[in-house]
Length: 129
Figure: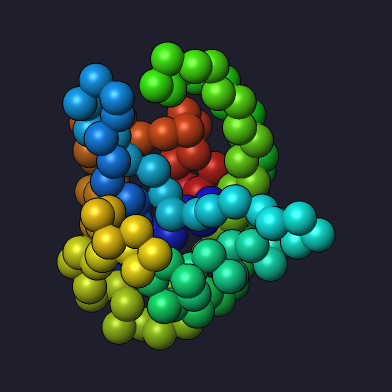
C-alpha cells in the first residue's frame, strides 16, 4: 500500500470500506503482490489499474504485519508500506474518485486530524509521516 499525503494540507489518500458488522473504516490504496512480482512493481501497477495514476518518489518506509478477524475468520496480512506522490500534480485536486476495478469503492482525502472511522492497518499513518 502507498501512503500519499496531499501537499497543501497533509490529508491522506484512503479508500472507504464497510466492515462485516456494518462499521466503516479507511485504508490507504494498494493491492496484492502477484506471483513473481516485486512489491515496488505491485504499487506502481495497482495505482495504474485502480485509479489510472502514475506515481513518483516511491520509497519503501516499512512493513506491517496484521492479524485480524474478518467475516468470522482470522486473517493474516503482511503489508509493504511505501510513501509516494502523484506524477500528475492535478491528481491532488480530485476530492473523490471511484476505484476503476472496484466501482463500489471510492477514494477520498482523509484530513490529518481525523480519528474516525478507524484507519487500518494500525500504524500505517505514522510510517508515511
